[in-house]
Image (cartoon, protein in one colour):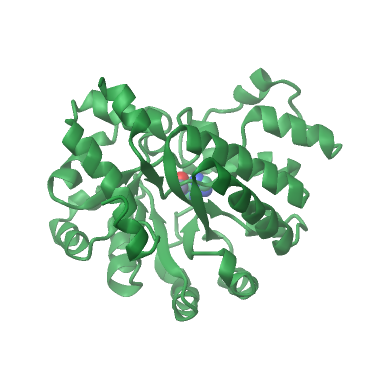
Length: 325
Ligand code: HPA
Ligand code: ZN
């Protein structure tokens, strides 16, 4: 088998994927029409022309502004079901999907509309041989008080949510800002993860807080942990999942940050490959595996290890893990 075909048929778990980041221009236009929302752009090409980012905030501006078309439970269902269809085609067997409730409740959309729509798609997608769960992210540039309220709502839907994470603009919003909300989330049984993005001046400090003070199980992005050998050792020892996203890490140039992935893989750290915001960065998961595999001439054993890491650091049951490991 050539590497591309091998990757295509390899069973994989996706652990770092923002459902809002799967909103393709075609669906955006369809939902705008359905909900009678006037967009500035009227064609796929015009929308794609707005996809220019030079840093995280400039990406987030495009990402949040597209969300106005998501209004009804059916809209959230359609968004999730179209991602899950693509994920199944990529031979993803398990997906842990981030969603950003505050990006919708702040526009007047009820929490239940979001969760019920996403969850119904997850149930229906089981027929495609993919199982999935939801991870609720707090927007870290919103207040602690807003996070507290959001967590309170999430607790009412505990059976539909696997865990909590932190995303959005990291600058001046360290993990420790949400230490109380993470403690409360852990106390009711939610799993914990947090974005520690690359190219943030304070990201080593943020990684340290997340691992040493907040007991997260995974770091999203977080590959620049390689700058601190003690933290690398801690991550290896605790089997912390590091969810790298080759396409978004380097704002669309999928190979720029691959070196760290290989270094972590060689050190036995549980690093995995994921697609993050595939509608915006031009690659679903197989594209991301292919980019890394080609640039660094990965062996099949190394590619298998990346996929195994994705299942091992997922939040499926120990029993289900034995199917894949
Ligand atoms: N980083 C931070 N916030 C985000 C991202 C990301 O990669 N994607 C969507 N929100
Ligand atoms: Zn992300």
